[in-house]
Length: 291
Ligand SMILES: [Fe+2]
Image 1: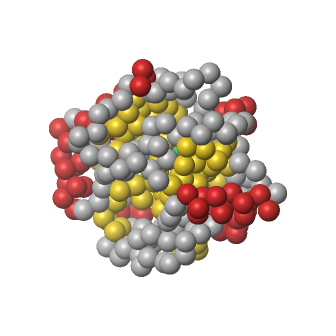
Image 2: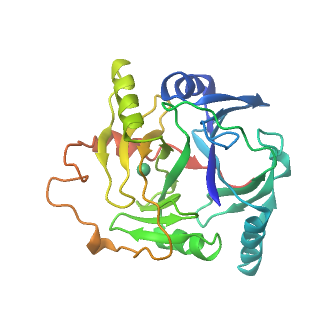
């Protein structure tokens, strides 16, 4: 199972697409109906869909897997009495996916699909490859983590005072649930080829007059390099690389394992976090409940 895409609804979608393609580095993957699709260089047919709408809102967070992986989630959901909704109305999108939607404990819409037409990889060392994690602000992070483990079949990688990190493959986290008292999209992290690719893009954005809201730096849990930006359309985006790969031998850390010395917010000790702006932007995109 892999994190595949996030589907957003935004007023003035065209300006958002212009930023994501022209500045952030995503690649046009087509249009269907009201949705514009953007891809990375990896095998996912797209990584972001942007629809014009009332928003800002998250329509869904999508994972792709094998038919067997999808079946396992369906049967666990059935056992837990959670409704599964076939997403037949959304088949007309890049990748020709088939799958279903399931609602999380706080109305988060998760889609699980099998792409019948995966994309061809593109060679470009400077562009985002794929989405690698999408943390979510949660009113009740414990309940969301329990849902991710028991219904979605994810595994807990680490728990800190602030958030729970869960994974669906060997990447340290695909989702994280942030103890914040609200339900909202926290940020979207794009995997880059390596540390140099992150830094080249930090430099490229600097040339365009755009500074990170936090970073560059290196995180504790996941040990990944990061640089966070607030997009003009209000979402928090991250360039990241070197996210730790873990397996079942990984020792699940707790809040006591992940404490920084005073004044530190990352391993390198050079990054400054624009707390006020990030705190607001990390709450801009609410979840659109299942219709
Ligand atoms: Fe992140």
